Amino acid sequence: MELKQKKILLIIGGGISSYKALDLIRLLKKNQATIKTILTPNGKKFVTELSISSISEEKVYSDLFSSNDKSKMNHIFLARWCDVILYLPATANTIARLADGKADDLALTTILASTKQTILVPAMNTKMWLNKFTQNNFRRLLENGFLNIGPVEGSLACGEKGEGRMSNPEDIVEYLKNYFLYKNMAKKLKLKALVTAGPTREYIDPVRFISNESSGKQGYEIASSLANMGVETTLISGPTNLHKPYDVKLVQVTSGKEMLIETQKHLPVDIAVCSAAVSDYVPISYSKKKMKKKQNENLNFKKNEDILEFLSKNNFQRPKLVVGFSAETEKLIEHSIQKKDNKNCDWIVGNDISNKKIGFNSDFNSVSIINHKNEIENIEKNSKKYIANIISKRIIDHFAKKNIHGKSIN
Ligand SMILES: Cc1cc2nc3c(=O)[nH]c(=O)nc-3n(C[C@H](O)[C@H](O)[C@H](O)COP(=O)(O)O)c2cc1C
View 1: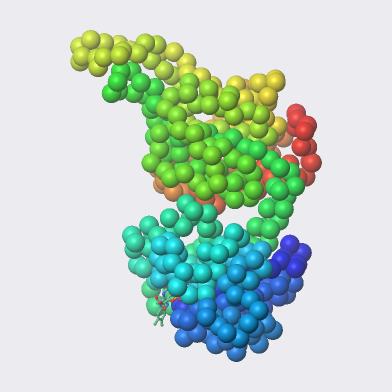
View 2 (view 1 turned 120 degrees about the vertical axis):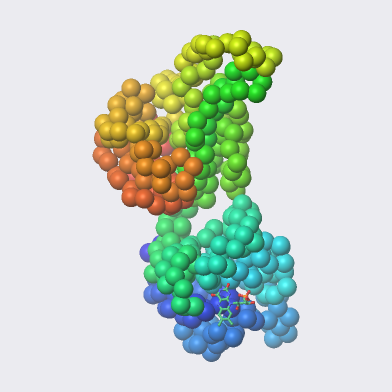
């Protein structure tokens, strides 16, 4: 019973899906969670205090300037009381006000006054959701540690179809159960992780370099997901256009050599996830001056640093779990297992980069996680965030199950 006695502060905003909060309260109570609710002034236009208090069997808070509760300031009391804050539906308006740090009602004042995790459950029309202001505001919130459940694709109350539908109450409860389960496990295990991500650039002269198509998105999502679960995470990244994930230590590098040096500096760790696409080759010589067109028609290369192999074969500070990535255009499983065995890493995550709709640069991926026993878990096309979450859960499960903290898995 992951939710038993967990204190959930449910904030109900003003949108067409507000009524689903009633069903959610019922489910949370069935799971023995303790709930208090805030109903925003606009939320009152969609659901009544009476129905919420009848189902939750608790008083509903809504007024920031209430003089009824003489002994306490509600925003401080609620901010301290809860284990987690769940905002549902998180409307476009709320997302904008939160991103601006506003505190003009009880809900937002409580969030600002709290150090507890806030989880947003957005719901709105597709165009509103995809509007660049909403997207920018939402991104700012995620960069500052807010988590989200959904929105998902589907039919919307306005009659249109698309992304923007609120996750259903069952999925929200499932998310919360997982959230508390993994937070608990990671906290007990006190794990440290190092994630490499992005491409590397191997310069030929001051303006030209060898690189590849890697966007770094999958690695950034893995770092973010591990950190959210409570793992102390360092992300060593080649050049990307991505923002630093919340609660992650970001180290930016350019070349494979720099990535290796930073990796060495950050050992020991329990977990290493090598998702960076380190260039396989580097030019043998570097010209300090820009090369002229005719100067060098033939370039010579040597093999680059192999960070995955270095970590996997490192006898002194080998992470307890080394996870490699293999991007393949054919024979995905066979080639991935070969790479795992050759490099001596524990698990390998294979992805088929021949499909342009997934993999490099896309927000979606489809992967096969192959563990040290060559057991394979295929994950169908889904967002890189979702895939990162599954990989992170498998990692934590592995440490929790074997309780191998302090021992090597081999
Ligand atoms: C019938 C109706 C349905 C609405 N549904 C939504 C919605 O699903 N999502 C949303 O972001 N805004 C929706 N709005 C607009 C919000 O109610 C409005 O922006 C309000 O200020 C949000 O209040 P809050 O920020 O306290 O949640 C709707 C408005 C009306 C009149």
